[in-house]
Amino acid sequence: MNRKTQMLLIPGPITLPERVLKAMAKPIVNHRGDEFHALYERIEEGLRNVFKTENNVYIISGSGTAGVDMVFQNFVYEGEKVLIPDFGEFTERVVENALKVGAEPVVVKSEWGSLPSLRSIAEAVENNNVESIFIVHNETSTGVTFRMMEEVANIARKEGILVFADTVSDLGVEPFYTDKLGVDVCVTASQKGLGGPPGLSFVSVSGKALDKGLNNPRRRSFYLDVEKIHRFHLRRETPFTPAVPLLYGMAEALEILKEEGYEERIRRHSENARMIYEFLESENIEIFPRNREYWSTAVIVFKNRGLNADIIIRRLYEEYGILIARGMSKLRNETTRIGNVGYEGRAEIEYFLDSFRKVLKDAGRQP
Image (cartoon, rainbow, N blue to C red; front, side, top):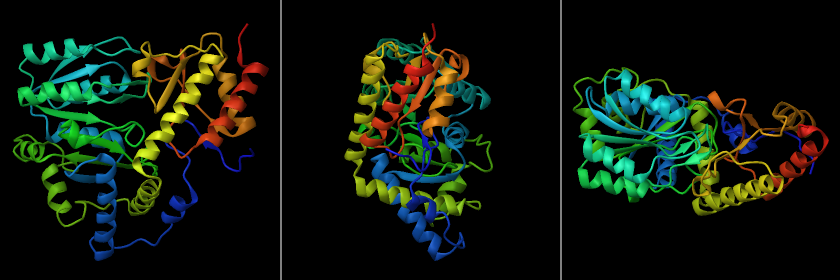
């Protein structure tokens, strides 16, 4: 197939359809007026559908990192012990977030490419008087998905502690049912599985978490203060000037998601990932995560052993209009990443794999 536009197969942002691009060109409206209130309600309805929640969902003009920051600025108290499974670049950032607000992170660490055991997490909760747990559901740097959410939530429920989840890189790609799992605060972003433009984050907050945040004596952020955010949310507004064009694009992206269907979107991404993993195995390319059970659907990470990654990435882009990503952080030179969070279907993935095969044959292998 011939490509008229580039195909972004990176962990985000994604290639946007014309419908979303056109929506972002709509005239700006008063963000304190009725038109904006209707837009806000439309977005919140769509977000509740993809979060699978009845909780309040707050809209933040800021990247997914802003959403994670909101969690620590409001729902984690100074001196609080927060358990953090640490298995990649983004989990390390969560530890740093905890330290910045004066919390005491209880870190359960594992090598990159693996996950801490459920037993080690349970023992850490039992032995450390933990008051909350923060889980990065999909680790973009390593291609590992934390598929023990239900078990961890059950542990938290027994202990009466809150569960926070970062689903920035895989909500709308990997099955995730916020309320059913008992997740108190769930963070995601606009530019990946939700199919929208970059620059927005969304935070689902339970009543229990909201009460904790409102009673936090040391809420330190002015912009991300949950009291302000919640107060304006009740009148379908944001405390400060929102990125209105991005919100128009997000509303359209959520409408597209609704038309496709949540389960169908999950199925499509799962099928894409299956095709990519099978291709890599057929080419004797080593997958980075150790355990197949935790291979990510959203970000496929493979080792560069025997491959000239620089040539592969450059030629895929220059000759076929397909962009994949270098490895991240300390894995930058060791791995390459393929994003599977956009609108691509079977035809696009087949085109990508055919192009990848040609590049490998011509110049991708190292002697």
